[in-house]
Image (cartoon, rainbow, N blue to C red; front, side, top):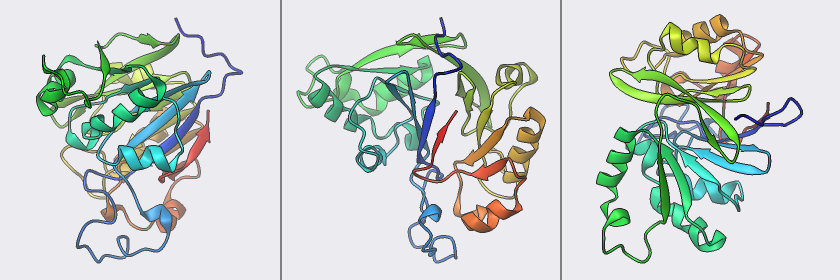
Length: 262
């Protein structure tokens, strides 16, 4: 199924690296929220993955429109969802711009609970008397089995966001996991051997539904990728440059607009 070859570069663009309320936080006057370093400004978490001239976005939250404009994205093959929280699905309506320009429906991939939540949150998209300006989507239901989009294989990785199932994804040597607080040993086997791993790290102290920075670092040290990146960061993590200096050499905080090739 998988046609990614060693010579095929996977380009990953971090569209957003912030938590559900973003950074800066409205009304907050902490040093991170007042920082003039653009790397401390974080939209809601999402990544764009480009391989073999195909473009995929994992999650489209409320900042999706401005993320697409900022990165000058002109083509979109599919949107893949990790879970149903609004900071990961709220931008669905802005998919319609791609419908107009590309003159096609856009494929979306998600588990059955996520698809159900999308139908509930955006009923006008699926109404029998569909509003003309609603996004045009082709829905694909996924489970824990690998699936293919345009001959590119995606391997789902099941994690828990406290008690909520969330899906991470491995594409070739790149693994992306957000909104996780635990991963079973069985699912870790799917991650092993990845050259680049992205993990969420909400804050420095323990949190019931997210890895902390320390927990994410420990897991990356266990998995031993060539490079690890932390995402879904709150302002409680600290200033970007200061935190980076405290991390192991192969681990960095991701930031909005960061591009890496795998």
